[in-house]
Length: 367
Image (cartoon, rainbow, N blue to C red; front, side, top):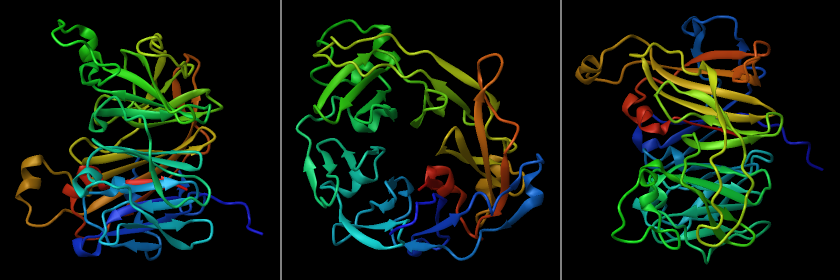
């Protein structure tokens, strides 16, 4: 009988040697992180814990293709055998799953993989596929293609009903049938305000929720304690966390499903505290039960952009890792809880390319 699964943080970092792909490091946030009682994390700089848990031979520039699905980490990179390695973090067994039928260029696009229950969804310009649940090891076509270009997704979130996915796209004018605006109409502010649509994974129907955007960038997560979606707010590279009310997953034909934009609240704390000229990239990971992990990649020294461009080799890099609880303050805005914060600072391997990190190869998964 398997023991209850204990989740950990898994860091996906590009190997300084491109031909060696990616290293995945396992972090125990209760053991490897210290109480967060200082603003100067540089003084805690230490090597990454132990050797990498596993190395994946894959082309750089595709860290987003590491996907958390259930207890598994999937590496959805193109391969000659059209199969992807899947590491089960519960049993540490490695199996293979088929890759979705798409081109290499499309896999390296910005289209998201979305995990809903025991199913995994993949979309691109011409395919909308689902990897079936249970023991099903094959992809099947979803008969209802997305009414937008998947590269134009600004953010997405799974509804707490466990069956509906909300997608926000940058511009309402990018909507396709059945929600496309008539040709020749005069553009309105709605066209530039974005739009949000939902997909019901049981009825396989799309619904136009409204001509408004959810306030996030990337993926947002539902937190039951806060009764809200939580994610990074879509403005400014330093970023703030924000919470958003969860609208009901109404369903309708055409524009019948439109509803008002949900209310949202901007967090009080700046999540990334590296000096602006040192900051390269950041990420937010949801750990469940109103707990989050913030990762921030910074240069060890202070460089201007001009100085960085003149360097003959990548500069030394540090990775800040901090965990914290989130709650609502007296004024009703989400804020970091003062108790229970933990943090540390890791020295990234010599030769890690800051350009690669800046291009969002910094990836972390809670599995």
